[in-house]
Length: 220
Ligand code: ADP
Image 1 (cartoon, rainbow, N blue to C red):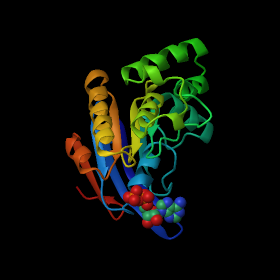
Image 2: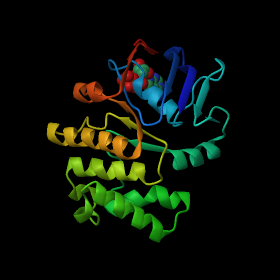
Image 3: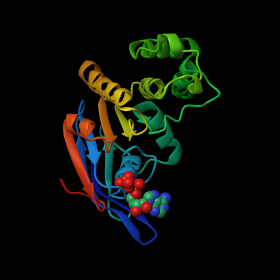
């Protein structure tokens, strides 16, 4: 479903990605592991179209056969909104908005009606065990609850893939375990695809595949 070839990235003279090739299938949970500075986040951002690879190395990047290399910024934003979900280490929920509103925002951006967005958001929050928290703002929720709201937000537009960067990095071990189990439930029930950068060994070992990065390359 995702194909990437010849992905290089330079910051000035520093080559932080040195030719990454990978493919990811629908319904797979792939963990990207490796030491700090290996290029994991940079790769995740490129796969998620938040950043661009070097153009002069004939990079290939496609999601469901849509070539993403040549799309302009506005087409990419639209593509991201429709096809890609993100979960970050620090939930990145908007503090002024309730859980329900945070989850609805990507649907509003897509043009979904308020009624339809709220109904889908409530269904997701209910599935994630948060139905009695929908009107709370992020600072009234626990870390684990905030991260589950972020999962609901990532899911609202039925993305083809969810990219997660250290999703449990800020959680206690119990909440982390619950979050990891949730990823696998979503995969088993809905064939949700995940690509997850993680230092969490338990999560990496549960994944269908572990891609190990070192010094800008996948070594394993
Ligand atoms: P990881 O996620 O594996 O810790 P990163 O992808 O965050 O690694 O970073 C890879 C390398 O790229 C590091 O050496 C980092 O310092 C460098 N880097 C990341 N972002 C930038 C940037 N915006 N400008 C310059 N160097 C960067």
